[in-house]
Image (cartoon, rainbow, N blue to C red; front, side):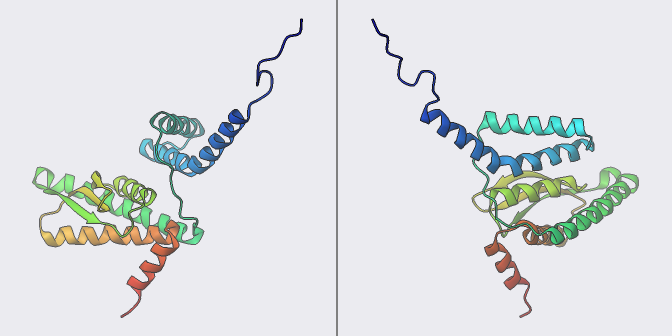
Length: 201
């Protein structure tokens, strides 16, 4: 009496191979996000040791796997020189803001007034808004309290803001940071729109 082998037993099915390819492609698409989340983890803990970065990467991978985040759409461009300039500006902003916060805590204390400032951004892509939000939060004196994806608006809690003029100055600074970020990794369309905006009349 002969026995027939059940269909698909002992040989990998086409469906499982396709699923593996899809998972591999999804991982490659999400890899830049995972690396960025790992670096943000290191920055938040101020610890860029290999062990902490590996833990941050595994934690990011767990978050992406459990919560099934939507795929991150990349712009397809990255300017290394502009990234270097952006890093220099970021370090300058961090140092300047650190001294400002230290001075406020030392000389004004509880007399310092704060405000929530809304900034409507040029770009509404998730990656750009997330990156900008993390950059602004890492600079002492402000942090993101809400994001309106529909209108592309960031709401930040900012210290030492007493007048509409000071709020407008902060808003202009955020838009300047966004412009530098667009030059680093914005879409070609966003970069072209920024160039038209900055072109002399």
